Image 1: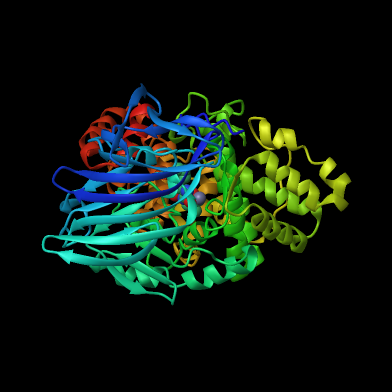
Image 2 (image 1 turned 180 degrees about the vertical axis):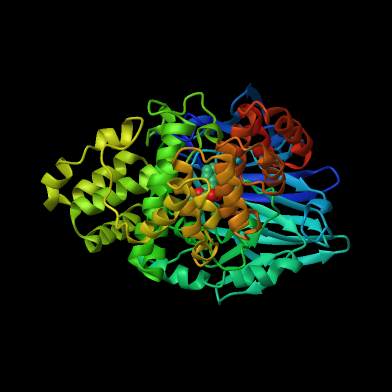
Length: 601
Ligand code: BES
Ligand code: ZN
């Protein structure tokens, strides 16, 4: 039996096996209206179906022509618990339940954007973001990752727009001002992978199964940026097994998209901030591709085991990048992930006793959006790397990974399922596994009990350059020339800046020199810009406040918004301007970001 603290659904008794959506997207009302047929199947004798909902306007539940009784109970954190009386259903029996409804004004999964907020400013735009528990705001469902269902959809949108979903497109038909699109997702998916986008979109082919979708003015640069997608997908198949989803397309969203990428099946959503012009942020694509196995095939049963999704995905992402660009590259990213992402998160964002720094979290009474951090990503992938090193053979660990994915594909699992299989697979390595401190790694807050070993070759050069800034006198930094830095790859530049940041705050003189010498805000790579802003904000360099506020206005990624707003809010001189900027930006921000930043403030 699975207990999911983030869902009210009675999925242990009865499950949704398939959903048929029939939607009309209304840009004037900013809502989706229509119906869903839920094909339910009982695991045990039951007479009720309990669903998750959030701010939905429900007209009724029906079985055939018969209207069904239902009650809606409110819960502040999760939305609504909807109990539907469906009549007696025996174990193993199924039924079709129809629900007619429309989405609420504050549907947290949806952002309807006026045309001014798109790149080309031609047409309005809509996109969804259901992970972790926002699917319930677009359809009454069992919004737990432990429930997987197939879905079909028929969606009508204004004819100027193209509609795409996390599914295979099955054509469209124009009917005057409205065009109706059909979709089919034949692989069972958890509700959080339901996704829709509608906008003025153009397509450019990358390979037979990969294409990029974007607004017309950026589709060429997007195709250039993501040209390695097919190569990465093939490498992923080598590591993880056959790709089962048919197509792997990408769609570039407007800048308010709160994430770098989202692994919606058949159609990864990405932020336009990846368009650096030099493919330097392609690891995000490797990451979302990796989710096609880790997450989308083998899924965490509840968000308390989120590390099974993200830790494994980061591990696989780096395996893909390692095969394509060399093992040293993998070692570099893994070390950076540990030193510059994990450790500062544990020490600065939280503290080493904070429960969110555990790999397995307790989400009773906690909104998964609030507990979100790099911990499951970096502590999780470090754990896997550590185990790989203890096993002593990358080849064998890669074989384990492939077998694990094969064994648990199409299922939702907990950490115990993974651990039991690990012990079974490495039965010949009992003493080795016996020496691994699983309990501390998985259940204890703070820094991991062991640090994996990393090849530090590529990091050394970055540390060397950073030292020139941190260890020399104020006047000596004036003679540092830009060439050494400019020649570096963007990821190495970010590492230099991170090394500078982890030293004591720089003097005002050095900050000015750093900014002047490298023109950091002119970089096309937003990670470089962000790393610089973090240094300047940490040092409380007042001159940087306007640029930081501009940055949080231009880029909607929570990865940037969260730390920047947090640091600006807690800095006396910056707080009033930051609060004012947030209030000004709120109407055009994504609902998830608004919620998160409000709670920060
Ligand atoms: N699935 C996540 C995004 C997500 C997680 C959305 C939890 C909502 C709730 C996605 O795969 C992701 O991790 N994106 C990262 C990419 C990075 C780790 C390469 C991001 O957005 O920065
Ligand atoms: Zn991810």
